[in-house]
Image (cartoon, rainbow over all chains, first blue to last red; front, side):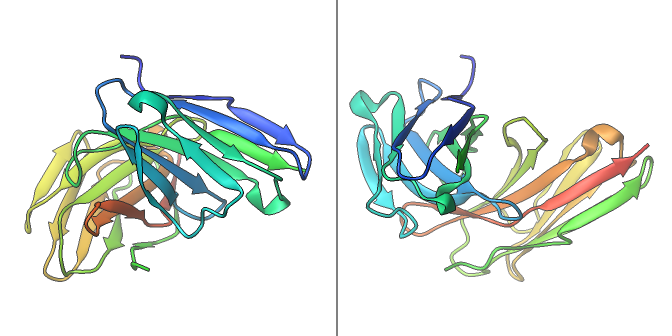
Length: 114
Length: 112
C-alpha cells in the first residue's frame, strides 16, 4: 500500500465557489478522519467515518461542509460557497481501531480562498 | 473542549544539542497519548503511542516518557541533527469515539 493520498495538493478558489477534495486511505483501515489545520494550530478534528458511516462531526463543520465515504473506501470533503476563513490545510488520516492505533496522514490539501 | 498543551511553541537549537519538549493533557480517563512528527511539505508521521503510566519508548535518538497521573509526556531528542527539524505534535484520544485532540505543536529548528 502506498499510504494515504489526497487530491488536489493545492486549490485556489474565489470566494463563493464550491470545492471538493478527495482522500484515498490505506485500504484495510476502517476509520477515516478529516482535519483542518491553520497557521500556529494543531490539526482540528472535523469529522470521521467508521467504514461508510459518518459517526461524528465537529461543531467546526458548518452546514456548508459535507463529507462522504461511499462504500467505505475513498472519501470526499466538499465546501460550498467558500469563504476566506475556509483557507487552511485540510488533512485526511486513516487508522485501524482507536485509541491505540496510530493515524496515517495524507499530505493535505492547501486551500486558498481569494 | 479538552486542554492539550505543548511547550515550548518553538525551539531553535544547534546541531548536537539535546532538547526536550512537553505535552500536557487531562489526567482523567486516559486511553493513550500519540506523538507525531510533521516535516515541512510532508505528511505527519507517527512516532510513538504511549499507553501505560511510566512508559518510555525510544526510536533512535528520540525517546518519550509518559506520566498519566499528572498528565504529561516528554519528548527528548539526543544530539539533534538538522533533519530533526520539524513540528512535533501530541494527540490525546478521548470520548467514546476516541477522537484525538491535538496540541498546537512544538516547532523545532536545528541549525547546522
